[in-house]
Length: 251
Image (tube, rainbow, N blue to C red; front, side, top):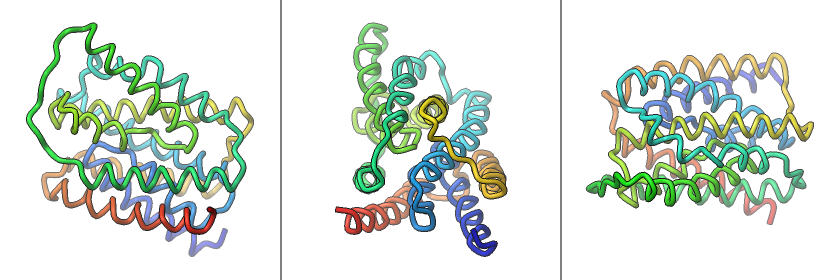
């Protein structure tokens, strides 16, 4: 890979990590979108999207937990079966065409979910049994899909929780970060088990350094200077463009 390309990708990843971490996401969908423009090997794309996700949301989870925005009691039910589901999804050996079609579809759906995410009154549920009944199936399904395409799944979980009014906005961000973290770890484990994990030095080191810097800055700022809804919608438009492009090229 040319040095200029590496610099461009690293700078884009730094900005993506900054913006996504400031609203509680890891940026996996955008990492996939950017990488798909420069790299054709989908195992390389999935590996680096997951690694960058892990780096960013680890920081986000630590900060959210320290601020009281991440309740493990609320977050764990979503990941009880999502991790093995993500691992299973990551072991699927897809053809290049199938992967990019699936990726394009996921990016389009992600963009739609992200664009139409709104803040609505919460309908709290305190019954433990009801919480498990609703959160386990949702987490499992999103975990499997996340593992297949190489994202953490928070970009799906957050809008769903928002639309269903299950949690307060600040708690949704914390739960989404934790969900992304554990599913990304499950996804990486799945790639390792299937022998599909692909690391490129110095490319891996450069993009990881970029997202750590961006993620730390974004998590600390926590959207005090920016309109979170505006950033989500602008990001959604960019993801939609890449998703449609991928579908048009591979269908």
